[in-house]
Length: 392
Image (cartoon, rainbow, N blue to C red; front, side):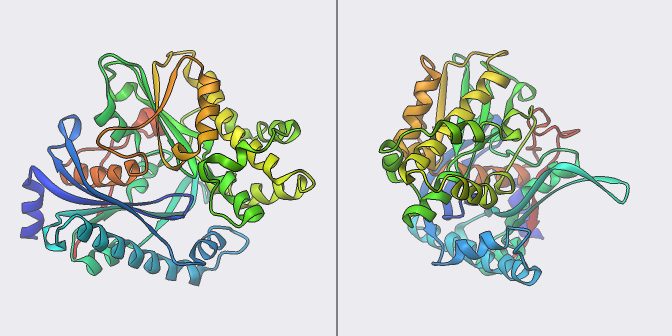
């Protein structure tokens, strides 16, 4: 416990951030140096890498994220299997950064979401929201010998929030501008957007999941071409839009649901992908990929028109996540947003590293005693500390 007390008092920390998103393609691992906390925090990325999962793991995970196929015994085992993968990723990124595990102060782990149910359901007279991330943090702490912080979503859900998105606090701390009205758009499996008015307070930040990011594209690429994603958006660029498919996708109720809101593969995952495949199997594969990619861009833009533009007209949109590498998607976004500049994140944090760095920061914020949920984003009743600490 003395070591933990010493950790609480440290002003500068070396932190590992670990993230595996809804795409479940691998573990993003970031090694960062963090000085201070909150708006005064200064973050320096020392190393970043994405470590692939073993062949067949993604299929096994998605099977156990589907209510019709999941087995309780498999989920229990996955919790510790994922913890082992995350611990290995932490060890590898520390080596890549030229350090030893004994030099690491904390690990911040998002874990792997297998269920995210942000809409309240009444059970035994109680209204319940829920979210489940596997990748047991106690196991990570024991396997690495490093204090590990995870389970970031549950605290917000417990006080009436949707538990996501979590990245907006990072956006606020690192990208607040006195000159520009910014949006930070992250396109992972799911796409989420953070709105930062000039010189805004934390209560003026708005953010929400706009809908699918790469999830539908990746799922259909696997079915049609046995590839994990559409590299550079080349397949989409070779196809044409199928109007009937695009129209049917735009009828998805989530797109028109008012924020605060968050979503996941429960809405835009395997079930929807299978439905598209079955209903449009006579169409050219390239055309289907082009259409679902267009849908991702259009759903983001319509979210802007419906929920953002009436209150704020943006100067620029800064994009991160895997979707930033899809040229068709980026060009489609710029086409929709017109004079508002759409650009990849640059500078100190690479596009693919942002979320892993965010979870390193969230771990640091908990150790610093700072609440990191945002009621204006999640609908929570109050601000609260997020995360659970596991000792080695």
